Every structure is written in C-alpha cells, then in structure tokens.
Image 1 (tube, rainbow, N blue to C red):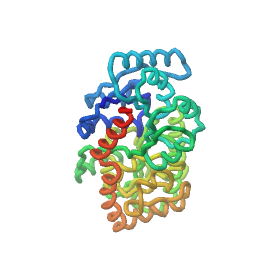
Image 2 (cartoon, rainbow, N blue to C red):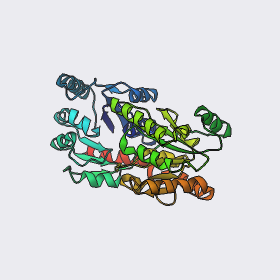
Image 3 (tube, rainbow, N blue to C red):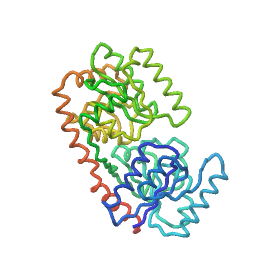
Image 4 (cartoon, one colour):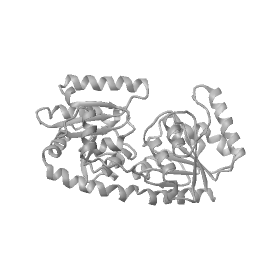
Length: 371
C-alpha cells in the first residue's frame, strides 16, 4: 500500500514529530510505503530528507493568496497523474481544505488525520465539512469524541501515535555537561517543560506555581521551545518578564528550540506542562515518560489517557496551588519521585509502541484504500 501524507511543513510540533516517526519506523510496517507532500521547506523537509524520505514539494501556499493555492493544487494534480497512490492522508484540516478537491477529482480515498481537539467552529473545520473525507483518524479517544460533534464522517478510527525513541544514554558525565551548558547545578532538581510557545501549554501557570516555591532550595526550571511566529516571540518576552517580576528569573532557563530534546529530558528530573486547554494527545508527555520523568500536567483532554497516578500527577487546569503542591512533593520526596519515575519508563509501551502502532496504521489505511 502506498500512502501520500499531506501537510504544510511551515511549523514544527507534534504533527511534524509524528510524520518523521512514520518515516523512521517504516521497517516496522514494510507493506506500507509512506510518502510526504509538503508545501514549505524547513525543519520537517530537512528531517524527512535526512531519513531518506525526500518529500514531494508542492510549493508555498497562503490560502489568502489564491494564486499560490492554484499553483500548489496544480503541482499535486501532476504528481497524482504521474504516480499511483492508494490513499491520501491530510494531517489537520488545512491540507484537507487546500487539496481535498484535487484528491476527490483523482478518485483516491481521502483520509483526515486529526491531531487537535477542535470544536468545529474554526473556519478551516467548517470548510473541511464540505470535503467530507472517507475516513477520519483521531489520536485519542478524547479527540474522537470531539470530532464526532462537528464532522459527519462515514468512519472514525482512533489510533495512538507511534513514538520512537533514539538511543540516548545520559551517563553522569553527559548529564553534568548538559547541565553546565545550561548553567544548572548537578545537584538541582530540574523541572522541564518542552513545547511550542503557545499559551495553552501553561507556561504562565507554571511560572506562577514556581514563584510559590521560591523558598524551596535546590530546583531549576528549563523551558524548552523557540518562537516560530511573531506572536510567539511576543509571548516569550512576556514569559521572561513574568519570571523576572516574580523573582525567579535566576532559576528559570529559557532554552529556546533544541534538536537534542531526548538528551534534555535525560538530564532533567520532572516534566511539567500544565495545559490550560485540553490537547488531543501529548507526544511530549510520552517522550518525558520514556526518559523516566514523573509527569505533572492538567487533568484534561488526551493527557488523562496518558498519565495516571502510577507515573505522574494530574492537577486541575489553572490551579496554581495544586500545581505548586505537586511539584513541591516531587522535589522533596525522593522516594515518591523514584517510584513514579520507574513506572513512567514502562508506560509508553502500553500506548505508543512503534511496531504495534505502525501495524495498526497500516491496517486502518489499507482498509479504506481497498474500498
């Protein structure tokens, strides 16, 4: 089976991480050939190329500029005329709106893969309803429930994303070196947060909670993630100002975008991402668990399918007191930290084992391709 996965490629986050995993884990499902159609050159196209999966470049698209959309649709039409695909997968509503009509005219099964928990009110979701894909794949039970409220689809499947983990062994020397590079004591308890610079990821709530721990010695916080858009640059500056005003700027490191996130996680002790709005899933949570980090996050959305009391703590969204209390316990109670960390390492295999999930993806896509 030959599948073409369409995405914009102008940003890098969970969707792009998933697509590079599809490329990396291809040997786990040899009957499935995954190819990629990308509009923007950038980190995603670079990583796919490095993995030996050179993407089909369709050209930069701005939906507000019709000539760019027409040009990209023409490029996709030419690709579908030259080569044969069994199924086309649009990751998120944007490529479904941009290219759904081309796929329909080519009479190839169209799949919408939903990575976010929308409510159907965004204009891209409204237009996606007009395309009406043959199959929708959701990355959690939560996102599937949300999707059913706004999209009428012949079939909806829920598939947890495969998550593959590079072999990173952080010995004492490597861990100490990375900490030195981030101006962090080797003895500090490091609380790490890894995400895009978006308010829903709970950066402000985390800083508020940390300000209540000013008198607790021996902790440092790493906030990992770079601004990719002007609004995110403004948001980052706002966070830096908050840290300074709350008197914790000397204990919070704004690390920026990193391509060594597994090593960063391996050198940390606690993962904290107190989302203020529900996310569909949470690949960063799974990656943190694999690194053996207890996870503290908000008890909403797909996070509730990943984290339980055996491997972390779920707190009410926006509850600064509950968050600071959970972090305080993990900082001072080494036995609790060790117990949750040991269970954390086992949790990803239950949900996201790459071999099992790649076979599941092949099964689901093959079923619609055969219709």
